[in-house]
Amino acid sequence: MKIKSFPHGVHPPEFKELTAEKPLEQMPPSEKVMIPLLQHFGSPAQPLVQKGDEVLLGQKIGEGKSLFSASVHSSVSGKVLSVESLNHPGGSPVLTVTIANDGQDSVFPERRGEKNPFSLRPEEIRQKVKEAGVVGLGGAAFPTSVKLSPPKDKPIDTLIINGCECEPLLTSDYRLMLEAPDDILKGAELARIATGAERIIVGIEENKKEAFELFQDKLQNSPGEAVLLKTKYPQGAEKNLIYSLLRRKVPRGGLPFDVKIVVQNVGTAKAIWDAVKDGKPLYERAITVSGQSIKEPKNIITRIGTPFRDVINFCGGASDEANILVMGGPMMGIAQWSLDVPVVKGTSGMLAWPAPSLSREYPCIRCSRCLEHCPMGLVPTQLAKYVKFDLFKEAEDWGILDCVECGSCQYTCPSKIPLVHWIRLGKNKIISLRKKSA
Ligand code: SF4
Ligand code: SF4
Picture 1 (cartoon, helix red, strand yellow):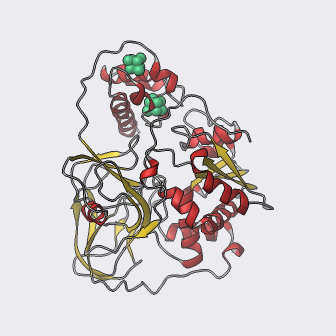
Picture 2 (cartoon, protein in one colour):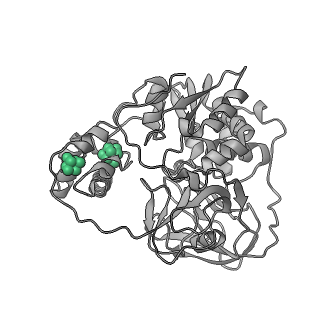
Picture 3 (cartoon, protein in one colour):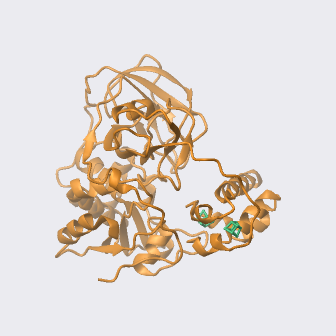
């Protein structure tokens, strides 16, 4: 069997064995949840509740009013303690609804499931997905209803289901594939109907052979197929995945729509099914809690809004030498400075390590390793230099906005130059300059 892949990239040590055989475990809800009204790409949801209100499990507490927004729902039943700006694991403070859990899990009664989801029209599927506040669960948290709405002049022929989970240490998608393959495939079929795609391809890395064989078996005699991909980082980045599977190149500044493709992560596909079949809002998700400093690494299903501190305690706590906590994977994750931030829809993992021995940064020796490993064909060393000297126009001309912030360049740099830091800074600056001049 030919194993597909993309050029460049890296292969960091995986460390997936810490949790790969650990089934998903339901974590009991916390006594208090903190639910930010911005957990997605786009504008924040508008609050629908205030201090003192009683809320039910799954009740909408924030309305995503604009196209690029997503509604948020309560992940417990209980009383609203506050609606105020609180720290967010993404970095900046965000308006957040804090709820005291009454321990009853009284379900909001107006959930509208669907007896025959496959009879729905595309716009009905999109509406139910929007109503449930579903966003991409691979980490980007892009509103899913938008991704399921290709422009009329850009017909879709293929829906790709992303089962790569290429970040080291993370295994919750793998467990989801083993434990809920039918829900994933039914959600994928709804996404196929919504986008008008003709076929489904499920892309899975070869380090998840068991999941691949399961999907291959389940997709027999269907218009879909499972395809085995080389274990390489960042195989799961959309543009690389599309190239690996279909040899199509998304144009610079373009979207998968431009090459007739929509990509959804396996967790998102399951959330689509839960939203449409059961009317279940996105108020919990699967995450991996792992790393050298976590005493009992696990895969868990946890409620949105659960404090990081509670999650770590549920996994046996962190050892004394723990010094670094990251939300997400080790390559693209966001370092945390507090345990009092909540799990959000985009939290795919929580990892902890002892502090690494600090290595200082050295001058660039022009070894070109960063170029050789960049999956987007960029020149990271040059981009970083342009940003350092405020040459944003030049950085843009050299394609800085195409950087997917995968970290492959920095991982391979022998001089330990924080290339992603500079590139991210440059991207943010260019985007804010664009907004100012609009
Ligand atoms: S420049 Fe961006 S896309 Fe290229 S390797 Fe570095 S982080 Fe990844
Ligand atoms: S990998 Fe580091 S040292 Fe080598 S060219 Fe790139 S920035 Fe310079």
